[in-house]
Length: 599
Image (cartoon, rainbow, N blue to C red; front, side, top):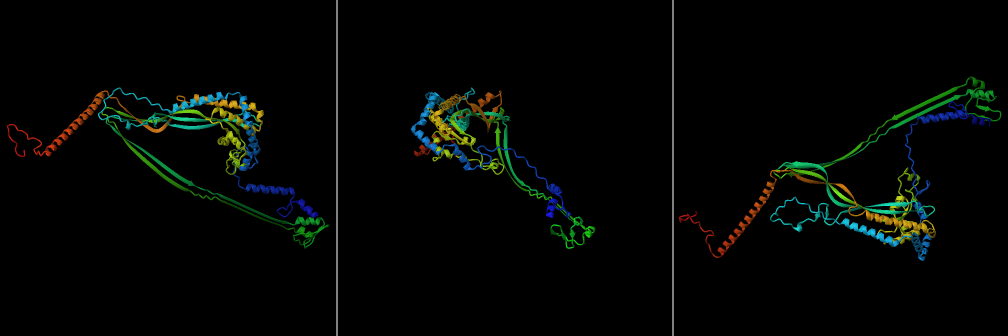
C-alpha cells in the first residue's frame, strides 16, 4: 500500500528511469507540446467573413423546406371553417350589407365618381387617336424657277411610292413601342388590425409609349470636295479579328520534416541506498522484503546492499535522429489553345462631279431618329400585402447565408389561394394574387379586382365588399366594428384613383410628351454645289436647248419613217397592178441627151 501511494505522488518516470514530481511532469509535457507546435508550419491566414443577416421569415435554427414554407402560408390564410362562414355570410347577404354601410359612411358620390372617371378615360382615348394619326407634312417650297415639262414625261400614280421616307413607315400609320412599368405604394398609416401584419397600398401601372416622330441630321462625320469634272474612288475596308486562347498551369511544393529522439538511463545507486537506509534487505535474487508486504522487482540485483552502493552502475543511452526533407517540386503544366480567324470586306464606290464649272462638296451626316415619349396610367389597383413572412432561400442557416452550398430561392405557395380545393379560394372573387410583388416582398400580395376598363360604380362596390372580406378573414377583425376605418380607406382609394386618371389625361396627348433623340447607324450624304456666277444661266439654257434639239431630231426621224412607210405601200400597189416600170423616173439631162447604159 505504501509503494502504491508513493507511486501516485511521484508522478511519471524521467528519461533516466527515475520518478518526476507531478509539477515537473506537467512542465515537461507543456514544453514538449510547445516544441511540437513550433515545428509545425504556420497555418494559412483566413479572411474574416462578413456578417450576413439571416433571411426574413425564419428563425436561426429552423431548417427551411417546402413544408416549412407551406406551413407558414397556411397559418396566415383562411381555414376551412372560414370558408364555411364566408359561404354562410355571403348567402345571407351580410357581406353586401356591411359593404353598403361602408359606402354610405364614406359619403362619396359613386355616380359623380363614375362620370369623372369616364370623362378622363374619354380624354385619354381622344388623345391616343390624335397621337396615332399622322399629319401629312407640307410640300417643300420650290426654287422659284419653273421649267416646261419635258415631252413624254407624265406623272403616273400607279408608279408613285406610298412609302414615307421621313419616318420609315407606311403612309397613315405610326410606329409605337410600349414599355410598361409597375410600382407598389404602401400606406404605413393604415392599421386596422392590432398587429398590423397586413398592409394596405396600391399597385400603379404606367405605359411609356415611344412614338416615332421622324428623322433629322446629326453631327457631320466627314466631308469630301470635288473639282469640276473630278472623279474620286472611295474604298471602305473593314477587318475583324477574333482570337481565343486558353492556358492552364499548376505548381506543387512539398516539405517534409522528421525528428526522432530516444533517451534511456539506468541508475541503481539511489534506489539501493534508500532501501538499505530504511532497513530493507536486498537479496541476490532481486527479492526485496518490506515490513508489511512483499513485492518482486523487475531489475536483477546481485551482491549485498553495501556492494551495490559502492559499485553503483549508471548506463545512459541517447539516440537522436533528425531528418529534414524539403522537396520543392514545381510541376508546370501549360496547355495553350489558340483559335484565330478574321474577316475582311471592302466596298468601292466612285464619286464624280459631272459639272463643268461647279465644285461639289459631299457632306456625310449621321442620321438621328426622333421620338415623342408619352406616359400614361394604364392601371391602378388597391393592394393588400403581407410582407416578410417567407425566407428567401431553402436549407439551414449556413446554406441560406451562402456559407456552404448554393442557396435555392424559395417558391411561394400560390396554390394555397388559387387552387379550387383550397379553403382560401373565395378570396379570388375579390382579389388576384400578384406574383411579382409577392416575390419582391417575400410574402403574399393580393391585388383587388378593380380593372381599368370596368364600369367605375360596379367596381367601387365590389372593392367595398373585398375590403369587408379582407377585414373579416385576413385581419381577423369584426367588420361591424370597423365600418368607419373601412369607409375612410375606401374613400382614399377612390379619390386617389380619380386623381391619377385625371392627371394622366392632362399630361397625355400631342405636344405634351417629351422629345428624345437616338443615334442610328445610318449615314446621309448631302451634295452641295459650289457657286459659279460667270456661266450659271448659260449652262442652264444650253442644257435646255440641247434637250429641245434632241426632241426636234426625234420628230424629224419620226416623219422620215412615216414617209418611208408610205413609199413602201405605193410600190406594193404598183406591183399588184402589174406595173413593172421603174419606181423612180429616169433623170432628165440638159440638152435632151440620154444617159449612157448603166450610167
